[in-house]
Amino acid sequence: MSTIPSSQCYLFYGGQPMLSMTDFALSFSKEIVEIAYLDSLYKEKSGGIRDWSMTFGGGVTRTADASTTSIDYDDLMFDMMNSGDASTFTVSIRPNINANKFYQGEGILSKVDMTGSQGSYVTWSGEIAGSNALLPKVMGTDASLYGV
Image (cartoon, rainbow, N blue to C red; front, side, top):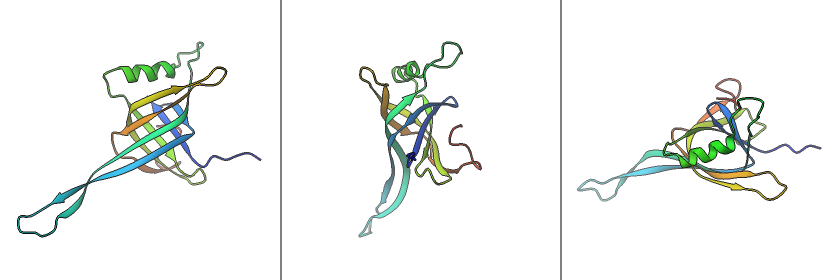
């Protein structure tokens, strides 16, 4: 009997899949704007600016293939963290693998950790700060989970 994962999460850069993650935590927040009038006894509140962020773990990268011109994503991760540019990634999250829906948005890599031990694969963990809306999508209609 094979195990079916309950969710999928991918990180894309330049239209290419960069990381496949086994663990992630997605957070949504909304700033509340408070309005007070001179004669009012209570403050009024209104929904304000929305934000999202994500932490991930167990990320496995693609590696460079010497026979082609493919990108070495391990080097790319380091270049992005050490450059002054805000490199934007596309994040695709499918919370329920049995459903046809997923979320997709762009974010900036704000933290990255590399973990490995002798004889095992290197995995990545880190944090992504959302840079625009994380929108719901339908597979086959709006976009593909595996491509941008």
